Length: 271
Image 1 (cartoon, rainbow, N blue to C red):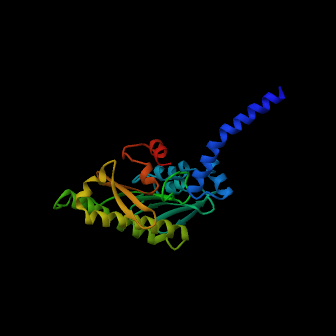
Image 2: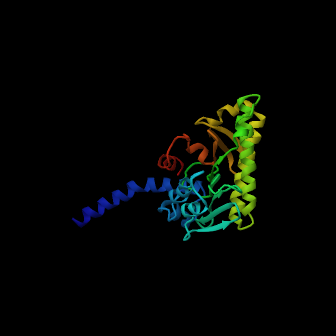
Image 3: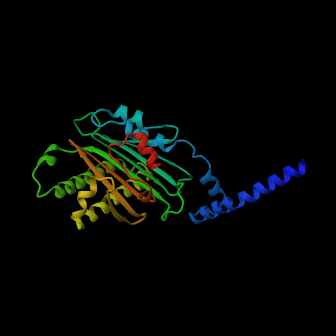
């Protein structure tokens, strides 16, 4: 009986070896040659999860959340650092031995106590993604109230309107980042990459006006990115609120966004 059990175990090990070898080769190809990296790749990710991180961003409502509400939604004191200026709240975090960084922000205008702009940026240098080059990825989303005067003024064509709105998004992003960027290096790194992504998208759209019409579609518009090879941008305008979503690196091949998806569906697709 013991000999029979031993033979069964031996056959099971032999059957498992090809799959194990394939997994090790695949992990090696994406840069996980170190045993510690392999363990990190296969084990369940520790808190905070991506759902925890993005939940605070989606939980903060434009024209609905004041500064106290935004802090309560966005800030997890056990994992994150809080930075504040007169008009901006910024929350930052890092994990995976600093291979993963994130930034969440809410911004307010001088005489407006409710949030007018909000931002989310997450960069992961070692995501659980196989056979993608580069393997690293990043995700940027922002939503903001835009002046109705700018939205309603006459434009030569719809593409010119969309491009001016996107330039305004970048301008607001830079102004809000400038208020808190000196607080810590994570704001500088994440903010710099978000601005770089917006700049790359704007450069692409200025050189290819015909592509601007695709910016509010599920497929979005692809553009080149200096450090993560390529990116895709999408932008939607509803009344006087504009939402921009950018995915970079390995996310480009992995994910498509529908602007009407709720958080659970977005989370399932993105993460």
